[in-house]
Length: 325
Image (cartoon, rainbow, N blue to C red; front, side, top):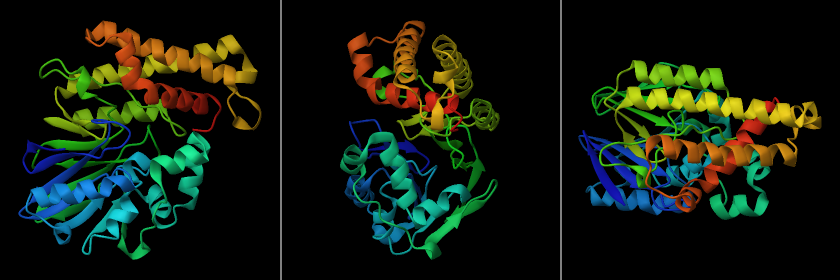
């Protein structure tokens, strides 16, 4: 699926897990292309189909930009880069080494999902040659046929997270820093967001600060990997702040009810009791947000949409409570 947002911005459904979960964004300027996030290896053919649909080929791509190196965003980067003759990979300095040598990245993914599930979802991660990797510290800018694209450091979801500011379009490509927004929940032009606290680097104060930094740019839209551009940025920023505080309160409540052994277990490994408390609480937070916002989906549909996120967000809160973040 390829859709156009305007100002040379195109949204490609990566096909990861389910429709309209994981977006790849294309920025096209005078026949030159920057790709923001890549999906997984199985997403690579979709990128080339989208380029062909725009009358462009692999040689038109100058940049592949990763908001961060979680594999639903970066798992296909190495394979994609191997088929793009002119492209360079732009990535946060903390993430660059993982794209050059993905062994540790894959090991961390296996730790979250298990070996079999990780390989089914992501396959073999292809390394990117070091000479093709460009590190993007805060304020680092690239040009795409004269169009300035600026990277800003936005931790909170992950320490290796950057956002890409496109001032010409008035859009910030925010990866997961500005939360998740699923199209099934839209009410006309009104969209909604929920935070992402996936393992293992959730940092509430940093995430609050990053959201404020994005909102302070006053973009007309924020483009999310999950899924696509959203507007009404001040309202959505306020919703994210409120929900992050609710998630933090949930984590502290579970830790208090279960005691110190659950809050800071031996070797930093959260107990199953803590995970269960957090999963149950995350599910209830989603249902509460649905009632607050007037989402029309029933609980069964909400469970379907958020199944993956409920588990991952709970595990991220558990890691934060356990001091792994």
